Amino acid sequence: MPLYFAFDELMDPSAMASLAPQARALGPGRLPRHRLLVLGGARVTLKRDPQRQVEGTLYDVPIAAMALLDRRFVGAAKIVQPIIGKEGPRRAVLHLLPELPSSASASDRAKLASAARAALLSSSYIEEIETGSIARRKPGTPLFGAPSSTFKR
Image (spheres, rainbow, N blue to C red):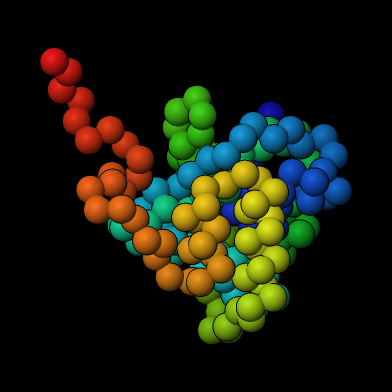
C-alpha cells in the first residue's frame, strides 16, 4: 500500500476516515525545506523554502482509496517526496494544487489549525498556520529538530 502525506484538512484522522475509511494513520510526518501556502477556501499547497518545514499526517492508503484522493484534488499534481516520520524518511505521495493568487480568510486558517490540533502537530506549527508567519523559536534551537552534532564523547 502506498504512503500518503496529508497537510491540509485531511491531517485530522477523522476527516480522512470520512473520505477513505480504509486509510490507516501512521502518525505525524514532516517535509523539510518547504512551507505551507493557505489559499482561499481552506485549500493549501506547498512552496520551497529552505528555512521552514511542513507538518502533516502520514497515512497508509490502499490503492483503491487513492482514486478517492485523486478525485478530491482535481487539477492537482501528484508527486512523491521523502517525508520524515517516526520511523525515519519514507517516500510518500502528496497532491500539490496550483499556486493561485487568492487570500485565505481567518476562518480558513482556523479550520486548518483545528485539523492540525486533531493530528497532534506541534504548537509552533499550529501558530504558523494561524498567523501565516514563521513561528517564534528559542535562540539556539535547531531548525528542524535535528541533533546539533553527531560527535559523541
